[in-house]
Amino acid sequence: MDKRDILVIGASAGGLSALTRLFGGMPKDCVPTVFVVLHISPNAKSMLPRLLERAHWLPAFHPADGEPIRPGHIHLASPDHHLLVHHDHVLVRRGPRENRTRPAVDPLFRSAGIAFGSRVVGVVLTGMLDDGASGLRAIHRCGGLCVVQDPGEAEWPSMPESAIARAPVDHVLPIDDMPALLCRLAAEPAGTSPPVPFDIAAEAQIAEQEFTTVSDDTKSVGKPTTLSCPDCGGGLSAIQDGPVLRFRCQVGHAFSPDSMEEVQAEVMEKVLWVALRTHEDRVELFNRMASYAHEHNQMNLVAKWESQMQEARQTADLLRKVLSDPRVRQSSGQGEG
Image (cartoon, rainbow, N blue to C red; front, side):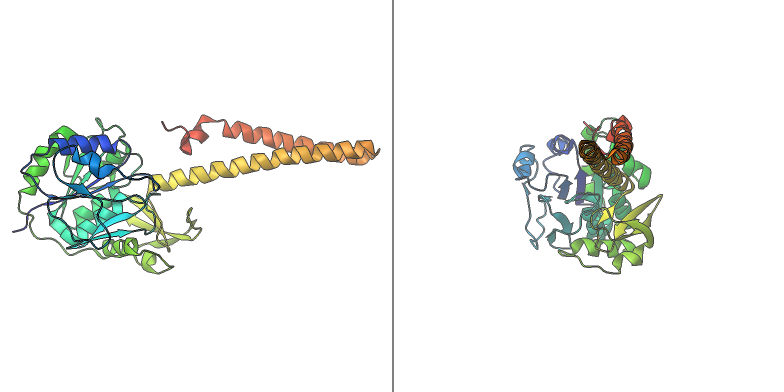
């Protein structure tokens, strides 16, 4: 009988340190097949395989698209590419961003649940926002187990906290206690996998598309809304995902609740800065027009331009006050350390 020997791990901020601790504590005779997504800069030259091999556990590498799965290896997502798995090979795709990132944790977790069912153990470690929560739900619905780092010890607790709040989690524990648990789970019989839910299969298919086109896939798993996609401007559908709503556009961009709130806050701040710059330009314009009218003794125009200049200055002062509010900076990510 198959074992629970497929380990999928997602992490973001603080993830390199967490992964190093986890892998450094794994027994050498425990050799599951491992897949990892760590949020990294899309333009970075990844040194992750070399860094993680310093833990002296399993060989780590960035697989190529279509490459066969290597049992007993750590498969790492490449910069700016989703890592997805099929039964015997991996897919490396520049599909639509999810939760504002590529690679994202949720696409890997969904694909692993579909491919391996109850053999999968999903792990969410330290990170910001909530990538991985939806993916853990998918693993659970496909028969797998869900493990989350104790938020109390996580360098960035948001991802673990979101996973615990939104997914059926089987184990919550500190990283130093995970190696013993994961090795015990890897030796257990996996049991029978349930049928793959339609909505999970549909969303996994979207992530596999290298160049997405407008389709009806999203409408099949969600309900259209009047909201627009912050990335492409297309219509968003709301997807009921357990206790929360997620959003996905027809092109495939997907947003968790936290990532949707963050991107809307950023868009709002950008709009406010544009408005401020425009009103400062208007102050300068009306000042010049008033001076020109005064030089030519057009006193009726002087009053008009000075009145409009005063209105523009008052609006600019109001916008500066709004933008200086710490709550605006924090909601748009400017207050993050």
